[in-house]
Image 1 (spheres, one colour):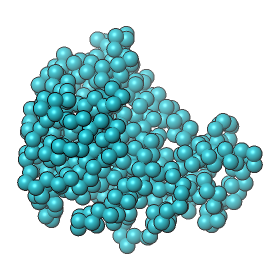
Image 2 (spheres, helix red, strand yellow; image 1 turned 60 degrees about the horizontal axis):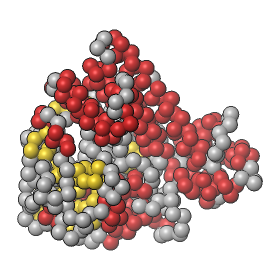
Image 3 (tube, rainbow, N blue to C red; image 1 turned 180 degrees about the horizontal axis):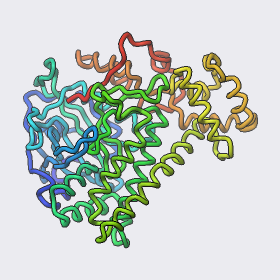
Image 4 (spheres, rainbow, N blue to C red; image 1 turned 45 degrees about the vertical axis):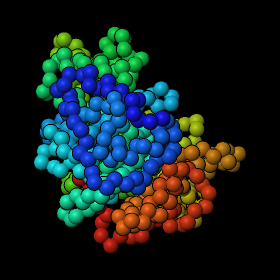
Length: 474
């Protein structure tokens, strides 16, 4: 189906304070460098005729392109933000009837660009494509990438880089920061309009319910707790968990300085801008709770007309976050070691394994992969592992071994987008060779497939000459 005439613009029914009408800035020589055939099929979008739309050279009939306004706490400090290089073309109804946003990232300057050029470099857009598709393959709620289009124009950062536009698909782009913006700069009526829109779009079962705004907050808290449990269970580090990068829908968004753990070191930080380790791997759950507290502060006027009662309702719900997160995380971790019926002592079995891994700086993914494949010779070098394995063998039992490993293959990926492999693929793509990039995309899109592959994709990474760092990619 063509994009022409098939886009909705329901977000523009909100007060104009929430967006600015904008047209993408045309580019000179657009070329499709990556098209997501599987996602396009799921959405019901045909490739033919979309290049000019996805490059920003024109927009589909009926579209009302906008840049969204929002604010956010960045590394703990509140600031006014907005879509500084992104244009929302509109909302598309997929084959199952779900409405999703189609957004162009790198589409030119907007009133929220804060001095930036509104453009994006090819490398970071390809990085977002591959990591978001890997997250989808891992079963983690995420925005996705429909396409990457090279622009034929340079962008200027520390060096001159090729430009690109990424087409991002999301359940919506409504963020905690959108509510912070409404709470700080808009009227209570505007805030209510935003909340009602968000409820109708993402939590329609709550519409018409008593205390619907409190229930809405509670639902977002639960989704975020479960999302964080999935992140942590696969060793994912977002890298920049500002409140503007937390969605109301519960999807992962913004793949700037993200990366996956290699050695299990809970305080690992890859992001070059996270000097203090605020968003380190182990800090992600409490930071999510902190972000949700900022969401609650924005929503307080809708909770209860008595401020003290509103605060109490918010605090009661926020207290549930650690419990929901912990239960969700443990349920996944039990599955990662083949346990379906949790019993007393299983939590310690998980914690003891992680303790051994931390002490040995063992590879996170490959430890669980080795257990899944019953190939633990390398793990026996970890001090205390043999004793732990005896306890684990006793727990799952000989009769349950096959069933346990069947379960483990559903939760322990064979392949993840290893940092060095991603960089290798991006370097080659930057020189015009997409062979490695396309192959890695195929592999990480099906991470639980346990058929043999080239060992370079599964072995522990080489020791880097310098600590690996990621960058925001602006």
